[in-house]
Image (cartoon, rainbow, N blue to C red; front, side, top):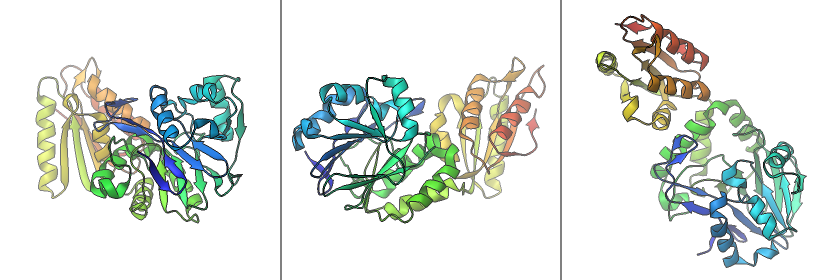
Amino acid sequence: MKVELKKGIYWVGAIDWTIRDFHGYSTHKGSTYNAYLIVGEKVALVDTVKAPFFEEMMGRISEIMPPERIDYLIANHVEMDHSGSLPLFKKALPKVEVLCSPRAKGELSLHYGDAIPFKVVKTGDILDLGGKTLTFVEIPMVHWPDSMATYVKEDKTLLPNDAFGQHIASAERFDDELGWDAIRPEAAKYYANIVMPYGPQVLKALEALRDIEIEVIGPSHGVIWRKHIPEIVATYEKWAKGETEKRALVVYDTMWGSTEKMAQAINRGVMEEGVSTKLYRLRVSDNSDIVQELLESRGLVLGSPTLNNGLFPSVAEFSCYIKGLRPKGRLAAVFGSYGWGKGAATKALTTDLQAAGMEVMEELQV
């Protein structure tokens, strides 16, 4: 079945129905690896797919035209879920010219060697396919230094790779087919776990794209936006600015039940103050699901028992994960229980959350 975004622009990606872990981020609903075929007098393929799905992508291309007609491969991003099929593609079609951003050239060469020549394109550069004009916009750190967007002028179509993506495997290819209420939570989880550390860079990218007229956004994962573009752009801006709601998360793990008693008491206290809250025990909860909730929550209360004069392992893992995502502008508090190692866990948590950019309030101990 051919999927056409606009006349002469086709989705030729792959659907990964069974993936449940994406470099440590849970993907309960699977994912897609989106590639796009742009057909003018000349033909360009924007991105490839994860290597095991190469044949699926080539099969979709073959339904539209012989793959030998492709003149250019545009690599918007280096990561293996997008460039993984590049060596197979070049082996099958050695005459195809590969275009990428300046930073991507070095990284792609490290991955695939110097045998594949890469042509550099920069922000403002234009590729005329004959009837289709492609413009390139570098969007560094959204979410890697090499990231780039490709814009099709005549069709007002933006292909921004990982920006605006979601991990969803579905038969539906467009946002109006699946629905905003189904897509928004997955877009939030994607942003929270992948893009959140780069809010300032996201704002710069949004500003760079502000004067571009956009009718379709084709991200590298999930469904394609054509109806809810104003909503997802406005929501990205909100997330990038770190805007949150009056909501708190109480997150903990427990060894012999003392820290759990504290967590439940704190959670009740927060609710009694009229603040919406959710309670998570770490060994039965998913880190990336909790972070999705943290994206739009004002407060985090994090608790750990003291073990071997330090953090309980599951709490240490979560604390490290949060520190890497840097959810700045949140209020935080820490609590914990101890036996002979008084205060070690809460001190470690305070240090980690401050390093993540949070304002840490007074710690609680029993």
